[in-house]
Image (cartoon, rainbow, N blue to C red; front, side, top):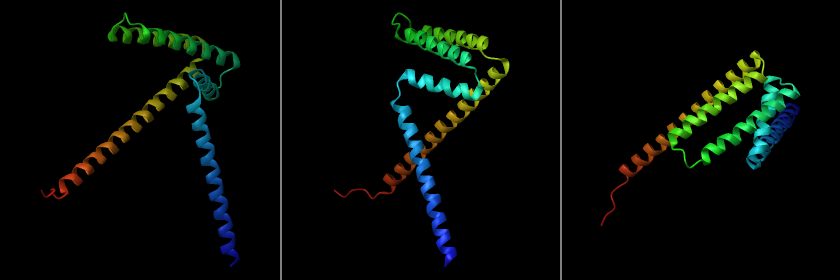
Length: 155
């Protein structure tokens, strides 16, 4: 009897802890979605600063590089005189310039770590997209089968 009570209390404690954790995650997601572009950029740089162990000076320099790059990219996107190919070319050039500026600010170790982080992010992001497409295709196939199997309407 005592063991059942202990197990019940333990179960409730675990459930409550998981619930609190889930709520905290929802709040963080809500905060992120409500953030402005500038706030999202600052949050991203804060995350980079933690992951790469940036000094305060490096953090500020990285933020300035990213802000400057974002402004220049927006100018290219809004430039109606450029066709799509010219815009792509200009954006690629801006990204390369940004990488060079980052290389001047970060140590070699930090650059390697950032490259690994980006590679991992791309891998995970592409995996997520592939899974979404697979699920969409599966749903479409099921829908088609359901309509094929449904008896024809009598007229």
